[in-house]
Length: 194
Length: 262
Image: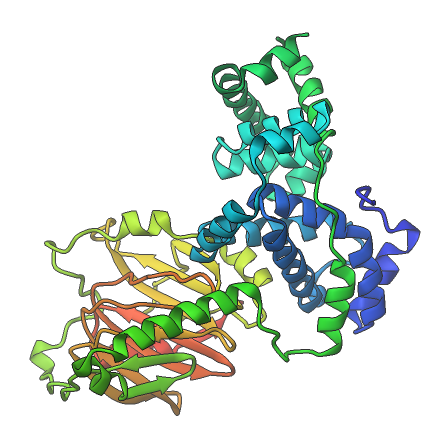
């Protein structure tokens, strides 16, 4: 599992080779970044099939636009930016309605799932549900900072805003999230207090 | 609880998230790169196609519709079905609307619909998301850049540029869609009249409205932004739709003025 976003010292060389048409170089870079791209799409969409579609399309789209990408820059923020945009587009699509219906049939009963989950995973899922009550821009910033654990600078690059804007948006999002947890997720709230 | 504590706890809880195993994206992408542009049918596309076929089959059950549906005009990826084609009335210069013509004040605002549209972005970002060059009209002079820009998933990135009417800011003055090859779109509900024309020598269709439109693609969006007419043409693998409340000659002139963003 690689969320570090580091392809080693060779990332810029690999990007340059890929931009010159080397598909094998691009495949290596996809391997390095696929976890982060897939996970962000999964957090935003809540469905692994949709997340896979978005991850795949993100890498294909990036490949087609590599000629306009500055190879000296880190690749991950650009990939996550594309992935976040594609996921946001897809959120409102009619196709998602059918995917949700399919999920409803596919999912196991909640009680059984909870029994199988560790306490940590249960808490994380509860937190995810709480974050889903935020608007999509707030969700995105929380996922980037806390779920993917990205630094402020990289979050700013992905969202194409200044670092100060990330901090102020995050502060407002956390305020709302705190209220949501207090009101709707008392178990999570109690867990935090202990 | 202080923000720092809250943040620390959020990060700690979020680190316990049990994600589904990451699929073999690299392998799938590599396979797609080895077979460029031969489109495999995605799940979304398959769903949309099934829905479209069901819709078409339902329509064909109605005899009056069945006769109408068999007649259509195809331009690029857009197919216009027409029930009762009627000739375009010849407009005299006196009745032609000026370039600044705006919809009637009684028309409902379409801005709330804009707020519901997915994929709002910037012109700069839209250029990064699309394979085709985004081109802007250089006529009429002073039109400037669009106020709103959207890129939607239509089995390929479909770009929608929207210019608002400065005289009536709650009205859309003009919109321009870029629909890439591989998308699948249908316009229906027979416009009042259809005429055939050309844009820089490429065949074009002029549909006189207003009339409802249905765009069917990967996102199954329904979108009509201007209570006016529409000019549709294809060039270089991209189908263009220009919606504006203007005479055909003006719409063609705008279409022929498109230039890549400097």
